[in-house]
Length: 183
Image (cartoon, rainbow, N blue to C red; front, side, top):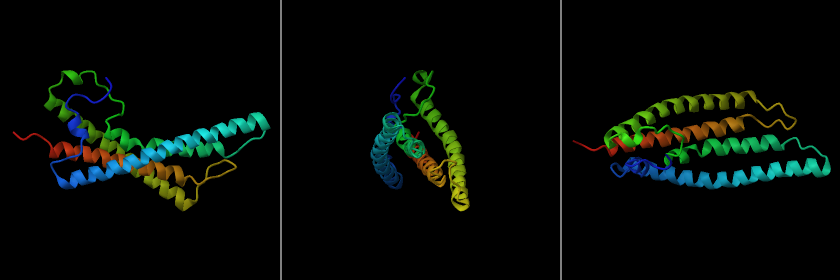
């Protein structure tokens, strides 16, 4: 099943029940939009870098030593930094075998429980990414190539992306709690 599940739009829309949650959701949505635009540009740059590398090797029989890592760093940034946007659209892969047969209230509870489990995993991943970033920065770790770019760059991109993803998931949980129907 592709696209939002019936009743799921309530968890995607910015919260209207609490002004702080709504303000944070709008700020993150703006941040996500800017990241998506910059990530689109980064994807094009990565394609250009790799195309340049292929042409340089094919036409001039000259090796470039920096292009693979530059493209990988760009792709790491794109992958992790856009994760919060994808989550805001509920675009991550999920198993939805019986979602359509669940009552809306049970489905809302299921989504919140999945969000809580996802948040726990993403918080651990973000924490480990920040510790890797710090370690790479302090120790001056670089890649093993001739170019030797600092490894703090991809680690920081991972950490920032996972942190944004944690904020997005937390906002979705808060939104579900704020908008929860009262008996």
